[in-house]
Length: 571
Image (cartoon, rainbow, N blue to C red; front, side):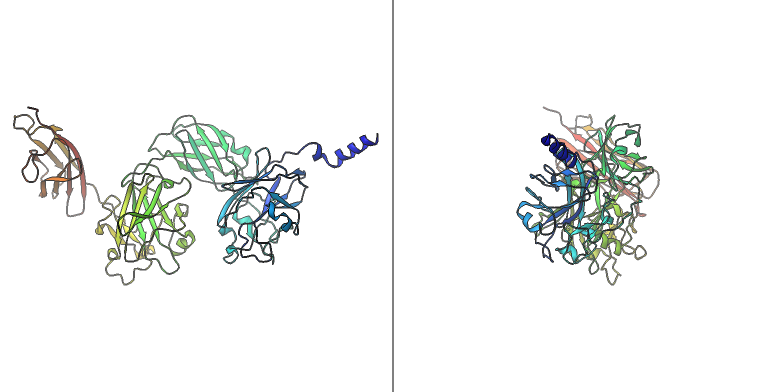
């Protein structure tokens, strides 16, 4: 009888011994992160993560995991975290050290926390993400404290989805508050609704949409909350752990290339319950950028003191291009590619007509220039060197092929400018040559000497010529047999005053014949080619390119490339 009474007392007092409780999202939250303990202020020179049970249920943390973007550690000891209680997670070797500050739990293979920023997540034994924090250096809000020795503390534990606005550098004289109430504890009201910010498609039947903040998982799974143009249906919606700020949408039909779709999201909520009004983003299926699909559109290579270089790119193609598969580089003294940097570590789509800017400091860019589309600024840790006098900017695709290249010079700046410091060099016509000095000009003073993320102040796209070129026959045999011995290049223009240059190139790109040099055109006419090269010699059989350039003195021009096959009768 006494044994039964003892069992009853244990069950009533410690129910977790009999049945483990399964935690839900946000039952336990990460409340403090010491990512960079060096130089130590008045705390141990070791990393730690503080967690707090904000629910009404006790949880045994045995089997729980603490993970960052690259690894995961596990709690292999039994420890019951009671409601409204705090625990310090650290490496097993530092448990004794941190026990002086509160309840410390050793994490086997404690993840190494990156000083610059990391994605931390707390997971239950069932694999459920209970809380996640994606901290970065700018969360400190203090230039001195971000250099080490100070922890990041959560302000309001009732706002677990809050990002930068809900975290601050510790104000405690020790550099942090492991095991006790945070020094910055307070109220951080979240009244902002979640907003769509961008999308990407890992395959033709998937669109991943990203939001400005974590979502309520239940509302995020409702397929009727998402609409896609072009009659594309959504068949499933799956919120993605650990942050739940993106949703994987499966479509009922494959996406077409070179087609821009619009995804609209509505009736969603964030984890605080703030409703989302209908908002949308562009979507599509990306392709590899080839030569001149994306062009270098603006270069700041001589910034003002304390400012940074930047390079603007413009997608002039019909393709959707992923900046995650583009690289920026320069050339070494031997001409080889050097200092190669990926533009973005995660997918970031550049749609037709979009401008993106690559720089080392987005905040500085916004202070120096008007940035109309800050969401299109990509930050890299270190741009390739852009010397003040002259240099090279190269953009390549993921295969290493050059997409565009500019060898710039300070002499390309406006000649009457006394000081070009802080003055960006702008491309005039995106369709004209990247290496033509006359196609570049200093950004206008009225535009603040730079136009990052939007149309250049010196933009002037040359009007095309209303002209037509025809080649007949498509296959000719200059063997003097009276049949298709001559190829005729016919032209027709609708206005007088045009001049033409006609050149012929072989399949290897070598120029073999000039047919016309600065030839004044009538309304229509033609040139003949007899299959001979510039020296009157027979050319080999094969495919040739007839390149025709038509222009006038007003700057209107157009180029044509026509293919023709040179053949000969076999004897």
